[in-house]
Image (tube, rainbow, N blue to C red; front, top):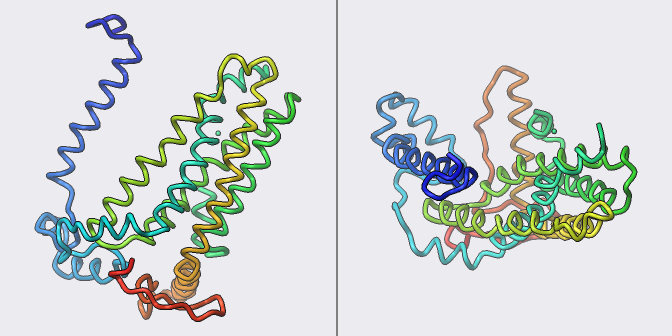
Length: 293
């Protein structure tokens, strides 16, 4: 299709892929059930199953009785510092990670020679923020290697592990982010708003790798990416502080569920508290109610 209607082949790729996505989104709008108890769910869930799923939803999950649109929740999201903490972390990680992802084929070619995270988190060894901090630290180390040496063996190892750490980052990140949201409108708006702004890092990162930096193996762009990853580590630490009690509660409940599963039971005696947060860090914190979140 190269040259058809005056457009290049790569332009047709974007057009056709985007068109297919839009058309599928329209179909999803009419087919995908909104809630366990929505009318569309009646076709494949019994009333008992619907009731069970509704009860198993987390405290902050959108419920059937929620309003379809609530302007107040949008303003609450815009005033919530956690929105910007998560967003900042995502932008900075994307800046460095996209830079590596887009440049990786060139890097690996010039050398002459891409289930573990979920398994680890299911066992609740660490809170999700702690796991993310470990991932960011690993990514930072290998980006520093890319920025400081041209040794082909070191660069090869850094490419493999740098890509691994960056890719793994988003698995706990989105689970962590989703658990801090509340309200139907607030959840939908915040995820869309954050994803939109967070992709700015993905736009900037690849643009760093210009031909004028090729003479020394793109050390300058990789140094900038490393700095972004380091700043992303700090942003993740800030976000961890803002969500610390909820995350500790997530880990506690997960351990109780694992213990029940080993005994052939289902743990349902307690669940994570998002609105009325428990205190785990030795300080009495003022309880937040749903309207404040």
